[in-house]
Image (cartoon, rainbow, N blue to C red; front, side):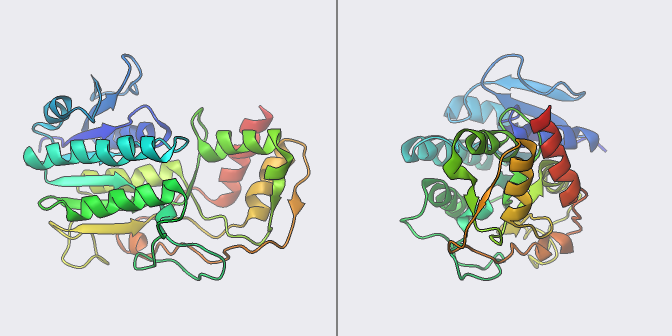
Length: 300
């Protein structure tokens, strides 16, 4: 049996690099798409492809003959226009190129941020209400990318929806960027201690992405059993319960700072990931391990 060929955009990012590694462990040949020479992960069976996936010519070349496409790129810290240009338009350029090339499977790393998690909202499964238009640019644009992929007929499409992604790295929002904001701005140390901190570790997110992309999680007629063949299936990818007392408490403890707990309105529900578990996914990294990794990185 030949190894599957999987294209990964953002292959040098936090999520993308872990997906590349997970794919390599599963025997896949990976076309790692990056913008700069020499930045793709160095693993056996990884081919570096340097270019802009939003360029139709480059996109068509890199997806030709592939078995799956995994898209991971979104410019989180940018304005709405840049998020649409890269996250929406760019993703759809390479996704449409994959459709034209006959690639049978598209896996998109979306976000649980597409869901309305206003105070008072309860549990959030894949049928939950999405954010309204006046929400943050990130949630709205990611919502619109999901909708555009849902309209894209042909291949099997899977929308992975993780909440906060924990894991070390220079570009890690929750292990690096957010802690720096908390360190530098006292106002960022305020939170309702009971506010839900929905999370998943990057290793566990990469694991389900790789399993879907390589067919280890097979397609099905029922979305509760697997990705619907030829359809578009969202799936929440979240680990166990946690609160801001856990996350902000860990960050401030590591930085030798004091959090300020308040009673501001906050969402206290959960991201329900029963569908992913029915597909056979089981998170391996528990909360204490993820937070100790966070503390160690900040203290180091």
